[in-house]
Amino acid sequence: MLNYTPKEISERKALKINPAKTCQPVGAMYAALGIHGCLPHSHGSQGCCSFHRMFLTRHFKDPAMASTSSFTEGASVFGGGANLKTAIKNIFEIYDPDIIAVHTTCLTETIGDDLPSIVSQSKVPEGKYVIYTNTPSYVGSHITGFSNMVKGMISGLSQSSGFMNDKINVIPGFVNPGDMREIKRILKAMGIEFIMFPDTSGVLDAPMTGKFEMYPKGGTKIEELVDAGNSILTMALGEFASEAGAIELEKKCGVSFKVLSTPIGIEATDRLIMSLIKATNTQVPYELEEERGQLVDIMIDAHPYYHGKKVAIYGDPDVVIGLTEFVLSLGMIPKYVVTGTPGSKFEKTVNGILEAAGVEGTVKAAGDLFELHQWIKNDPVDLLMGGTHGKHIARAEDIPFVRVGFPIIDRYVHSYMPIVGYKGAMRLVELIANALMDRQDRDCADEDFEMVM
Image 1 (cartoon, one colour):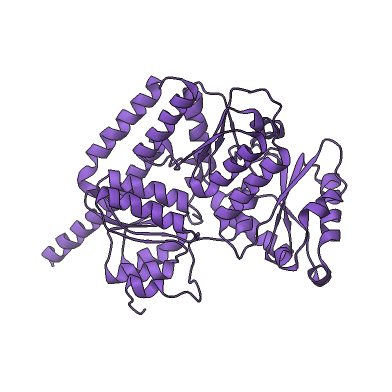
Image 2 (image 1 turned 45 degrees about the vertical axis):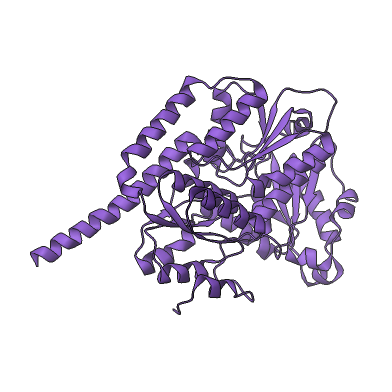
């Protein structure tokens, strides 16, 4: 493998090698699964839908149900309008969802299918719904697709009755079901009434009952999505995944919003709780005060193991931003910070965090794992954090590796365990400290062996 400097790598624009992202429909499908009784629909070829389902199923270890327009050569040439109309009719007759959430693929975007017109001409049974969004795979990433589908939920369902429901809307961003459960637990502990959308808890972490449930009990109910237009405030957690939906709801229904970073780590969780207090005039319960104190105690206890250690972080922008801020609070140095999702806002945000901490690092949006590997070869780090595909870098360079974010396809249980809130931060400290301690123990064992020899 050739060695390049970060500057030289950044000049490679013709292609991406092992990008730290996947395509828009994956995010759109995940968001749609967060609606109760919803069947996501991929308007394109059967192969596209199969890939997107497989990607989600391998991460969550739960079946991601979805349907497809099953394009053939004819639909690719003459358009897929007839396919989608037939699909909508058949889906309601055979699978009986409450709602169908349609997203597009590269093919349908390239040939120019007009979703609003096609859906308006389709036969939708009374009391059922069809929402839609455009998700061209050659633009943005799965985070963009998630954001677009959230906008589609709002534009297709949310309404303002003119009467406030005294609830807070929460758009949690592209996080695991375990994270959504943790955010809801914090809100309930504070006595705050809320509407979370989308909500994949109870869908992609549903219990084994011995009976197949195509539409599990979890997910945001349609009536809640409609009522979201009457809430007093929308909390958008994660600028990249959630802000666009909050803006759409303000435009349509006049619900004001506040954008916060994904609550990863002590500072980001503090900001969330203080914003909730300000918006609802509630108090912080002792339960959360205790958890925060426990987290501080844990951070101090494990401090000798991670202080001053250099770390490379990659993955989804909102998660990576949260992790960067958190490792800085631990006394670590985020040397390389990469996301596959394009956008200058990411680089500006992370560089601002690093500058405020007095730390220098290399930050790249629309980056890939090949260039990250080159940077690490030239100037190594002590820890690597990100999704499964970074394991090849960790093996090649013999670096401790913490799997966090999306996708994680070679481990189990992770999607049930939160990384948000104070509880999630405790888990991150455990993962980071134990990975570094395992490496230290192994190095000590190697030294002892050499002394014996």
